[in-house]
Length: 133
Image: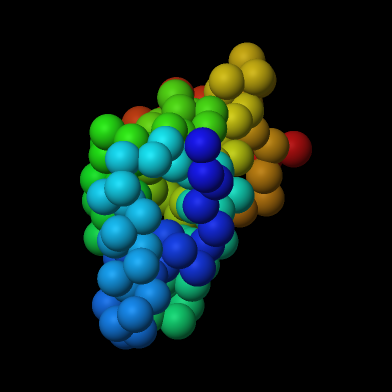
């Protein structure tokens, strides 16, 4: 199995460096088992939003498609799937990963001073409430 780094994930999704995009696509199509970790998704999200200006919904859709690729194995798959669902519904991926990981760990809530997160999580029907300490 080969673990993917952020720069490979970004090059899979953004074709602004032809040779690297082709190499990343070739790796994806090689049939080799590829590992995608939550930390790489998180960093890729930051790059795609901050450098390329993509919207949360578009990034979540691209990540969901990548995660569904037959030779891609996702670490913490259930938490990542929940985080991508929340992100597609408007929760920033970092916060969505926090919520999903806390849900997996059977927390009863996520304590945060971020009122916007609490509203977004509620609108996104997060399984874990965000509460103020």
